Image 1: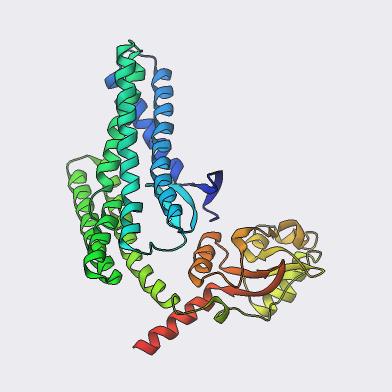
Image 2: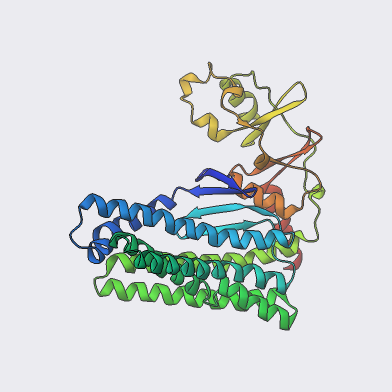
Length: 375
């Protein structure tokens, strides 16, 4: 898991992570609902009532976004695509897949599942609104349900815009892929639409800024920048996938691994390992048993005057699934894991024994060599 996120729960064997930026938009949503939306729809209530309504509505909204991403994941699982988890962050949520869909049909079904779930939730909240209205429920209940109807409709509609990597862009890519039988060409076209939509959002944001709508203007610009980078990186990712498709992880593994003992002090670790070998991390091994990984980041978090008293085993990263793979893992899975664990290295384990190590530098050398060959 990335250090900018924390694990919230695991549902249907799918890890759910919360990026710390998620709390920014959560706060903004609660503030806007409590200060303007609910006072306008339910005038005369106590200020604390507005804040409670806003908190409940915001949590239900993000639960809806989570359900949207779960729909993608469940369809992906039905089609044997590996799922690394779901992460909620400042712009909503993202389902992290271990690899791209294997056919246009899989891409289409997986992409369509998200908007269908959003429209389904909008229908559910609409039915609840009608039921509560007939039962003469309090007006604040109807306001919350109406808000959830509108927002789920908006999420479903926006995601159908044919700009990659939005769901609509993935549906668009699936259609082009089906006709052209060329995934790279389909991704290039869909990404271009995605970047065009992102530029349109940024332009709309600038217009809002010039018309004194500062908050919405800044928000549109940020979303546009995010979508533009996502569209660009998605196309780059396809090039990486193409390179890694012809490579085995065993071709990148370094077999001679320098390990450290958990009982040495940090000053000895720094002087005899970090300065000498100039790696940013080392596996921690005691009696041929891998205990974890020690990185320069953990060492720097300890005051220098404490280095002679603190042992490696006290601050190391314990051995978890995000720190190792087997030799049979695909290079793409390994690279994805390294990107998410924020360490930049992976241990290669077989039957609980350390077989080697692979780093982002090994992948970078491969990409640079590939570029030189094709230049």
